[in-house]
Length: 103
Image (tube, rainbow, N blue to C red; front, side):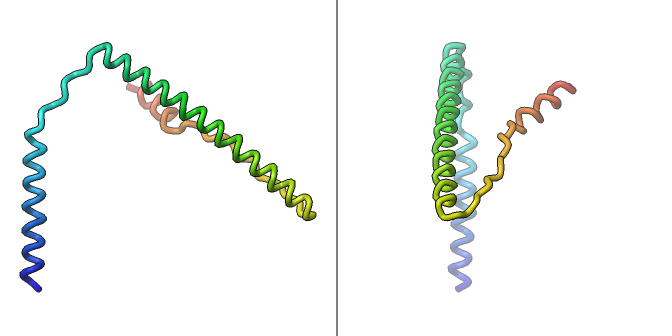
């Protein structure tokens, strides 16, 4: 039993050592050119627009489900009062601006 544990620990340590030494030899990525930076920004903008559209579609679908549920419950004689939920503000971006202004 002790031999198996010793073998497992030795194998784990050897793996970690070899993995660390392999990563240390990787070259740094080359800096991006202006064209590559512009393209990356464009891709980010498209992804953000897609995410926004997707979030709007999700909100519409959720609203439809809620309306149908309320209508079904009203048919049963149950009054449903949904709790309004305020839109979430982007907290990380707002917190980063005052910290940058202080510097």
